[in-house]
Image 1 (cartoon, rainbow, N blue to C red):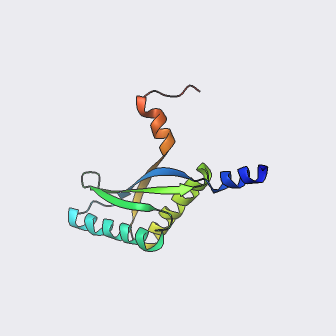
Image 2: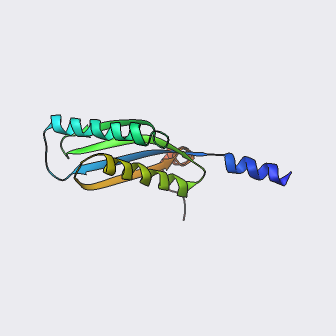
Image 3: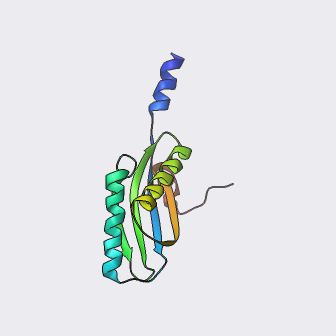
Amino acid sequence: MAENGKSAKSSAHREANVLIEFQMVEPMSEEVLDANSDDVIEAVESHASDIALGPVVALNVHSCSIKLRFDVLAANDAEIHKRVGKVIATILLETDLELEMSRSSVEAHHDAEEASDGAFAPA
């Protein structure tokens, strides 16, 4: 019976919302930034669609950045971060973007529900 509990636990997946912002090295027009965002979404859909679920992009012309949002399913937090790293690596490999920096945030669904009151958890 213990084996059944263990196998059920290992097949459970956590879902996380991921937001990655890629800031370009050089300023560019909205049209060029839009074309670059098309390259990002194409790279994700063509080469990381099994990892990045439901990818969408948004542009920030003021900061010359592309924001990519998607969901990730994985067995644990470490695997979620590993998969996010694979998505970033795929984008860098499949596009010719020159990035000044990238920022990301990963929030598990249950974490978002617990933090909905805006309070921090005690340390």
